[in-house]
Amino acid sequence: MRLVVWVSVVFPVLYSQGTDACPDECYCEQSSYCNGTYIGCGFRGLSRVPTNIPTNTCELGLWNNAITTLENGIFDGLTNLQILGLWNNAITTLENGIFDGLTNLQILDLKYNRITTLQTGSFDELTNLHKLYLYGNKISTLPNGIFDALTNLETL
Image 1 (tube, rainbow, N blue to C red):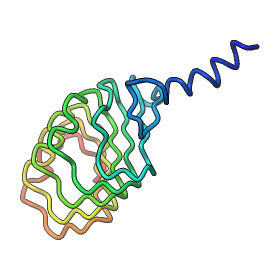
Image 2 (image 1 turned 60 degrees about the horizontal axis):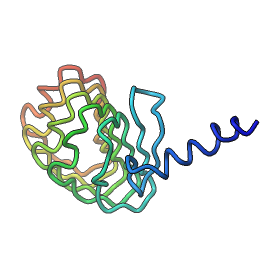
Image 3 (image 1 turned 135 degrees about the vertical axis):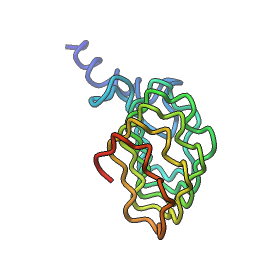
């Protein structure tokens, strides 16, 4: 009986809170969607993306925070990332190349931010992207060919 309690209660708490692999502001668990770690950082009042995200992360949820900018290189090394949820923040711009290392990304959720413009090439390296959510922003014009490299895109 003690083993059952430890495995079902104590181990998940230790895994999500007590490891160096999980950012302090978030919780971590095995992803049910992909082969890797789910990092949940939603509703944490974050003003920036945590810097110590484990490289085996395949889902990263950063929704409902106060993130205004995505720092260059913040997603470097997250080549296993398949789902990135950044909805309902205060992001105003996307730096060119910010998503370039995320070649396995399948879902990018940027809805309900404050994005006004998209730069040519912003999504060019996301060739495995299936879903891109941009609604609820303040985008008034799109550069020609902004989505041309997204040959697997099913939902925009």
